[in-house]
Amino acid sequence: MHHRLRGIVGDDLYDKGLLPTVHLQRTGRPEEVANAIVFLCSDESSYISGSTLTVDGGLTLTM
Image 1: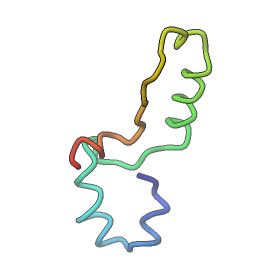
Image 2: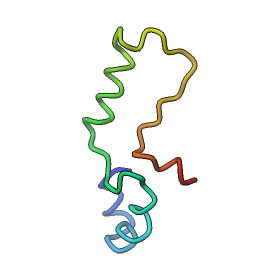
Image 3: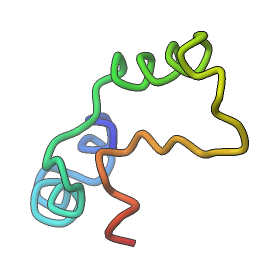
Image 4: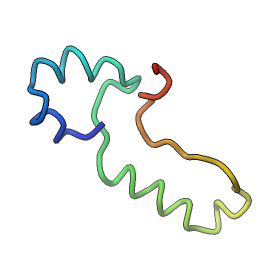
């Protein structure tokens, strides 16, 4: 969940409604998403196929 969403939904709804649904209890940083992309583009991920890497701090675990 990106911190710009706070500006859209407002501080109160963001802090009390949305943020508690994320297991890591914080917003994601752009470099965290970039690190996942770099990993998937690297030789380190050469044996990965047909998988989805969800970079969401655990948000989808609660849905």
